[in-house]
Length: 410
Image 1 (cartoon, rainbow, N blue to C red):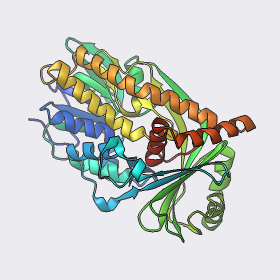
Image 2 (cartoon, helix red, strand yellow; image 1 turned 180 degrees about the vertical axis):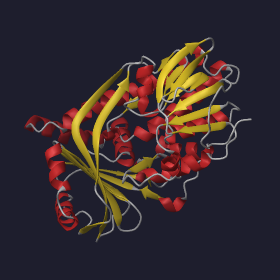
Image 3 (cartoon, one colour; image 1 turned 120 degrees about the vertical axis):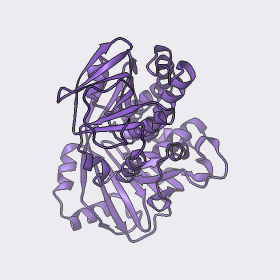
Image 4 (tube, helix red, strand yellow; image 1 turned 30 degrees about the horizontal axis):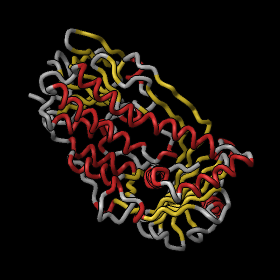
C-alpha cells in the first residue's frame, strides 16, 4: 500500500507512474494534480523533511495572477486571505523622470476577467511553500523522499530508473525535473540549457513606512540598478533591489538605521520615512532556458524549463502554467493512467509550453539589455517605450504582469 507524504524507505519498490525531483511549490502542485488522476507519485528533494514542512522565511514575495490562485486552490493548496496583499495600481518610472506609466487595476484585468479589482496578490514565498506541503500531507498516492539527491537516470523497458545518492533506485514511467534553473536532473537527462549569470545581486527587505502605499507598486529603472517597492499588509512593503555586486555589498554593510535612511532616499520618499522590519536577504541572479523540454520519459517544469529574469514578473506563474500544460497534454494525448510517459503526450507538452515561454524569454532578455544600458540613446528609447506602453495594449499587459508578479525591476 502506498504511504502518505512522509519519509519512506524505498527498497525493491514497484514501478511508480511518476517521479518528481524537486519538492518546491511547482513540484508539489504537479504531484497533487497527478495524484488526482489516480497516478502514483514519488517526490524527491535534497532538503530535509523539516525544512520542507516548515520552510524559513527567505524574504521573497511572490505575485500570483488570478489564474494561478485558482490553479493552486483547485489542487487543494489553501492560502488564507489574510496572508495575501492585493496590488491595485502600479507605477513605473524611467530613472528620475517625474512622468512614468501608471497601470491601474481597471486596465489590469487578469486574462480579461471582469469583476476583479486588483492586478494580482502578493504572498510570501515561504507561505506558499508551507501551504503546498500541507496539501500533500496525507495524500495516499504521494510518497516523499527527503534528504536525497538524484545521482543518475537509467533507461529500461517502458520506464526510467532514478538512482539516488544512497544507491536506492526507483523505477518510473515518467521522471519530471522540478529542481530549479540549475537543475541537476535536466543535466542527467542530457537536456542542454542556456544559463546566464547576470552578475547582479538581488537584495530583499521588508520595511515599515510612514505614509500609506495605497496598494501600489513603484518601480524605477536606473541603468544598472533596479528598484521596486511591493505593497504588503498595513503600512509595510517589500523593497527589492537589483544591483551590481559592489553596490549590494555597500548596502549590506550598513546598520539597520543607515539602511532605512538610504532606502528612504533611493525610493524618493514615495512612502515617507522607512524603518527595517527584518534582515536583509541577498540572492544571485541567474537566468536559464532549456533547449528542449522533454527527453525519453523525462519532462522539465518550472524553472528547470525556463528560469526567467524577474523583469518578466511571470516566473512562478509560468511555472504553474507548465504544470497545467503538462497535465493537460498527458490526459489528452496519452491516456495518462495507462502510460503517463508516452511520447505523444510529452511532445504535445513541449510544443505548447515552448510556444508560450520563448517570447517571454526573448522579451525579458531584450528588456534587461535596454534598461541596463546607461548610454543617452538608451535612456531616450526607454522614455519612448514607456510612452508607447500607455497606448499599446499588448505591451501594457506585459508591463502589468511584470509589475504584479516578480520582485525585481531594472
